[in-house]
Length: 250
Image (cartoon, rainbow, N blue to C red):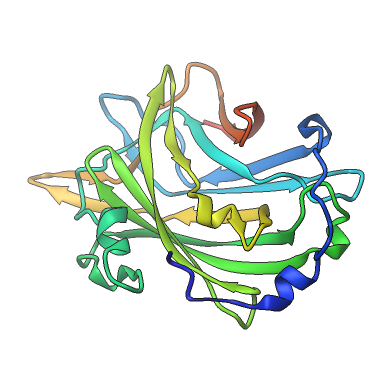
């Protein structure tokens, strides 16, 4: 168990309540992001950086169920996961207290934050405890990235430190990262952890290979004039909910 400490008050806040089944169709998913570079082709890509955000809400005011799997896909780009040093989720999670301090220099490629609710899905969100956590992103080695999630008792009822393996995936003109959130980051002491807002930035990283400059993130152009972002949220029942946003000129 990677939990450093859990405050009993979190459980007392919903003691005696039974989590009600929530029709996930009532949950709204809003996504957004930016890409710092335009143009490029597969033969002559352009290096850049990118960011993404998402918000999850139930218009009825109840806490939504946790999301189990995320797929974050951008049109007209690619990641060169073999370009910089890698640091796997297993490596970070190996110490008794997981830490990215074990990662090699140059492997970090981004950062962000999230807001979550810790309570009972289906109950009023106002009865849940708020939680803020930080995100750190590392290259995970060829075909992978690593997401490190950490929270402190000053801003969250639960202090957690856990790394998540992210798989680099491609589908047609889209490329991005897919990952499954481990059980301990979805449930604690019989309560649900629902992420309601997240934001992260992947930095512009350029490495010189001979006379050529190669980007960790590269724009390869789009078939149309616009670049789309598609984030698919999959809940614990296996139901998937895609959300799409056009980010502007590709």
